[in-house]
Length: 148
Ligand SMILES: CC(C)(COP(=O)(O)OP(=O)(O)OC[C@H]1O[C@@H](n2cnc3c(N)ncnc32)[C@H](O)[C@@H]1OP(=O)(O)O)[C@@H](O)C(=O)NCCC(=O)NCCS
Image (cartoon, rainbow, N blue to C red; front, side, top):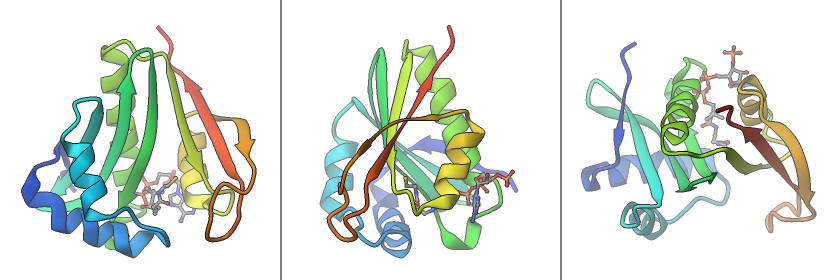
């Protein structure tokens, strides 16, 4: 399947929010995505297949650091390599602008995401106790150093 990764456009908003609501128990609002799309330090990219948005990520990029705030793939398109493509794109592009350290938070129960991050050699840096309000789960802080 041919996947294009490109910057978010306003016409993608409904598709993004639809995916977001399907995959997260505490989804971002439409307004949160719009706010991120207006700030250059937030990189908001979508994965498109045949003109259909099938995934996205939002990362805050302030070299030498970046934080991945959101990444998701439409359930109908999961386990086909789209998440890997999105993360690979992000890591390649942020390296070009001088990012050295990448951080993200993930729920310990999110096995799919943890496996994805481990594939890219993210490692566990720390925990934020009872970070998630709905389940009171800790947040795992994952970190990756980008080689020069
Ligand atoms: C996490 C997510 C983005 C992965 O996207 P995806 O397109 O399904 O992932 P890929 O097909 O690219 O898989 C890449 C790797 O992720 C891991 N992975 C993906 N789905 C998995 C699953 N259901 N169980 C275990 N590992 C999984 C595997 O290591 C996989 O590599 P492999 O194919 O060699 O086994 C997707 O599951 C998703 O949208 N989840 C809901 C949103 C979410 O939790 N986002 C992360 C918040 S921290």
